[in-house]
Length: 349
Image (cartoon, rainbow, N blue to C red; front, side, top):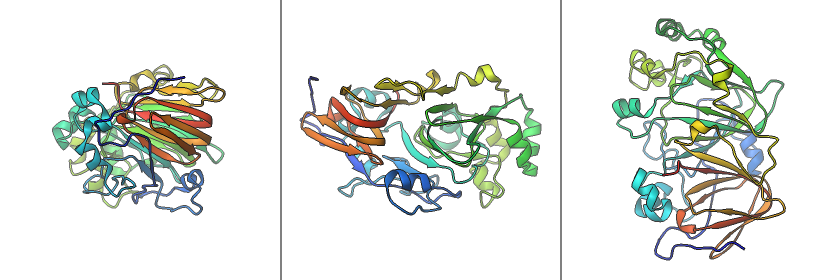
C-alpha cells in the first residue's frame, strides 16, 4: 500500500477538484464530441474548446477563458493566493505563480485555419510574455472518413512565397504545402512553436499548451473578421518572423508524432521527447492494480470508465467525462478502478 502524505499548512484543497465545462465562444464550429464525453446532451456549435483548469484568458480579454472553482473563485486567483500549495516549492522557484500549463478539449467540427504560434523569445519581445505557445495534441476521438491533422511544410518555403500566400489568402496553396497526417485515437503530435499547422474536421484532442493565447493565423479569410486578428496587431511582416519555413520530411516528423494506441501499460508517457521541456502527459489505466502518483499540480481528463482517486484525507470517485484539477498540496495519490485518465502536468521544474 502506498504511503500517503499531504500538506497541513496549505490553504489549497487537499484533494482533486471537479471542474465544470468552460467553453469560451470561438470562431469555428465544433463541440459535439465534448458534449458526448461529458454527457451534456446537445452541443453548442460555437463551443469547440473546453479550457480546463485555465488560468489563461483569451487574447485581449480580462477574464474570458478563465476557470472558476466550485467555491466561486477564479482558479487564477486561488493559485496566486497560495502558489506553493497549488504548485509546489520547486515549481514556484522555476515558474513563479504561473501554472505553466493550459489544457483544452478541442473538437474540430470543421477544419481549422493554417496558423502557428510564437516561441518564448518572440513572445517576450512582442507580447511582454514569459511564455510563447508550444503545444501538443493527444487524439482521443475521430469521426468521418479521413481524420487528418497538418503539421510543418513538406518542403522549405521562401519567406516571399509565404507572404504572397498570406496577401492573396491562397488557402489551397497553404494547406497543400503542409504534411497531412491521418490520425486515430492514441496518436499524439507535438507542435513546436513556429510550426505551421491545422487540425482537420472530425478530430477530437486533449491539447496541452504553454499558458498563452497567441495564435498567428496565415489563413484568416473565412475564419476571422479581419486580417488584424490574424497577426494580432503586429503586422504580417513582423508576425511571419516567428514562422518555421523549413521542410519537415518523414524523418523529422517522427520526432514529433507518436502512436501509443497499442501500449497497454498502466502508465503510458504520451508525448515525444521534445515536449518534456514544456509539459508532460500520461495515460493512466490502472486495470488490475492501483497506480501511485507523485505530488504534483495536474489536470485530469477522464476518458472512460469509473475509478477512485485516494488521497491522505479520503477517497474521491471519478467517472467518464469529468475534468479535475489536482493541487500539489493533495500530496501522493493512488488511482484505481476500470478507468482511463489523461494526466496533464507542467514541465518538471
